[in-house]
Length: 230
Image (spheres, rainbow, N blue to C red):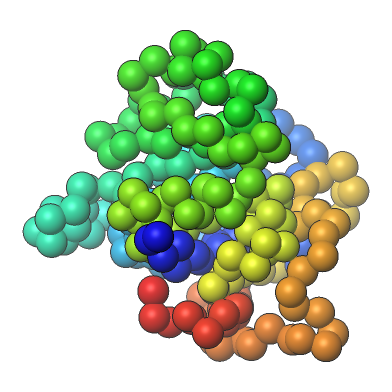
C-alpha cells in the first residue's frame, strides 16, 4: 500500500480564530508577502485540497501564480499546477466554478458513495469522481491520493476540512497565519469545529517557527514525526 501524502494544513485567520466574516464579500486575512509564501508552498506540492464549501464561497482557482515557479515545476517533469482535490458529501458543485475551468492539472472529486453516479453526470469530463465512502472518510481520501502518486498534499480549508484532517491524525504540519484584527461574529466560519484532536493539554503541538511578515505572523507547527521530511 502506498504511503499517505505528507500533509500540510495552511490557514489564515483573525486574532479570534475566524476564517472569514459573515458578509458575502471575501475577507482578506493576509498580505502580499504571505500570498507569495503560500504560492511557493503550492508550487512545492503535488496536490491542493479544499472542501466543497470553499469552492462555493470563494471560487478559488488553486493555481501557482509565479511564472518562474510554474517553469521550475515543468523543468522537473511536473505539471505547471498541482492536482486540484475537493471533498463533498452532497456534490452540490457548479461545473463552471474556477476549480474546474482553470488550469490543466487533474481535478479529483471525492464524494459520498450515494452521490457518485450523480456527480459523474454533473461534472462529466471536468473531473474524476471517486467514491470516498459513506460518509466520506478523509482517511480513504488520503490513502487514495497516495496511491495516485501524491507525495505532498496541501489542505487549504475550510474549517470542516481542517477539522477532519486534524481529528483523524492525518496532519504532519500546520502553517497558521494570524491577521492583526478581530472578527467578533459567531456567525462567521472558524478555523476548526468541535472535535477530538490528538493535540491537547497533555500532548502539546511543537511550535517549529514564528515568522513576522509585515503585519501578519506565521506560526508553523510540527504535528508528526514526519515534519520537515515531506
